Image (cartoon, rainbow, N blue to C red; front, top):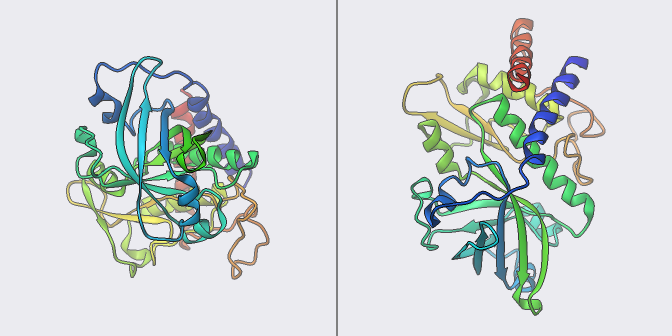
Length: 308
């Protein structure tokens, strides 16, 4: 347990260092470059979304998109503007958040970037309520994604966003907070050279065991019991169509129920026998001791490589 805690602390510092040092906005030669490196760049993206937030909050349980004006502020003298659409997502969050996370639909935005070809929408994670603790939740969850990028190439990329929301339904009232975008599933599958698997009937035995062992140990490290292969609970499953590991590839997401993020609303499953998400419970498969040590060794290797 002590070794896991030390590894986690080191990886957290490495990931946070990247955020802390990304306080400048790069220059771009043309509009194409603004979105071409959307999930490869690490500095915060400066976005402004103008729409009727009052109406959005009132109708957040509806399955309808609402038009927005999206402005990407590249620097003091250069910005690009595109039309987009938003729709609230997440059953719990639509019921309990003042500002639920939403889908940012760019299907008809006219963005010309080969990397985004075929992408219709992407997830935007925003502050749920007007409290400073929710800002911390956003940054902690973003850092979990960044840490897992260090741990495994089979991971979602994310982009930190300095998000300005302009409420046209409240006379242009503006707020500014941290948020982040999550790489769309189709971009993930294309980058890994595979296809997304949509079946909810998969068993643990169908996924690549080495990747799953590492994933499970990582989830144990951050205190996460909210995932499952069967039902694809907070896991996307990718089937590689080219060379690579055998078996399906599990890719985790949605970490706000982890002990690391430690949201006040996160509670462990009743059948686990633990009282808090800050207590750890291992959900990986029962296997030989050597395989557990191998997964821990890979985490240790990630720390060594990242620290030079």
